[in-house]
Length: 288
Image (cartoon, rainbow, N blue to C red; front, side, top):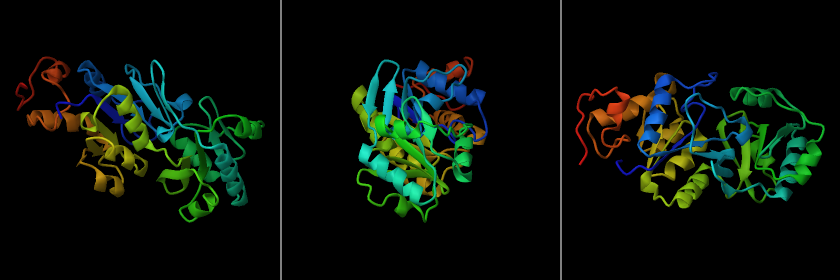
């Protein structure tokens, strides 16, 4: 893995524990060390741009948001893929017939036409409140919608998608879903990012924990599932690291370097020595 040039990270359950607002010092150290070694670090999340958390001491290079429907870096938009308007209307109609309120997401707003227990709980995972907006209809009709969120059981999913041609469900929780373009997803977003930067998939690594990360791990040369991740994700992953609560990503990288395995380390040359304050970890050998 000495050719790694870009690393993708899911947020909740991957670099950040649920119910927490800040990453650990070890996770911060990991991200900063990657950048120090010239590796682009990219958030890959289902969250909207306006709801991305800021972690002290970390400045990501690029962002894959709305499960890949809107990707950008510090300079410009890289990929912009909203849900077709006719499908937005059909999805809202289907949800209404199911008795389910929905929240729609533009690049600048998240607005809902109501709330229920599942939607409130879903938002709470990201420490957000559901905003029921008087202008919901106007937003739905006149603005580009990149994602729709609602409480939805496994049994309800087919009903939600009835008559919908160009949208699909992605989810990591059984009680709620994100609806995104049919030709979208984190895997598509990763591919667009790699194309933009001119990288091969072998030069990319990704870390995730949920089923909505499956396509992302499959789109890179080395996909790593968190120890707390879903069984479905682990089944497609190239490797599994420790739990997010135990700084799994930090220890995964550190352990592989200590083994001196050139095919399984992220830090280039003496990069980890800097992080270890000048002390070579056991098993370290210089790259050639």
